[in-house]
Length: 145
Image (cartoon, rainbow, N blue to C red; front, side):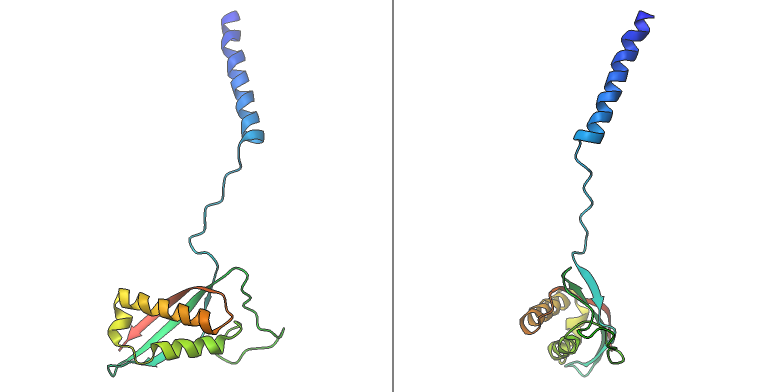
């Protein structure tokens, strides 16, 4: 009987101490860091662009916006024009995208490095000419003909 108590008492103490540590002293598990910081907004109307080499491109553009960036229009209940979303200054964003991408070569949109350079240029111009808090530019669909 004493041999059983010598085993049971320390095991019970370890279980109690472990339970107290886990419920009271241990730090709560941290939520995993999100892979995309911010909210993703895809411009609802795709772009059809003339390229420098006589070709054309059809592409969709998405923006990773800061968490505090509102995507609702300024007027509550106001419906945007057909093909446009609820992001404020969307027309200005579309103008910048069109200006920056018209007359680029088809290779610039096909090659990954040159496409990334175009995204960085768009990001710089969007930050410079709009009040929209853009974190990243995405080309969600690209077709060059």
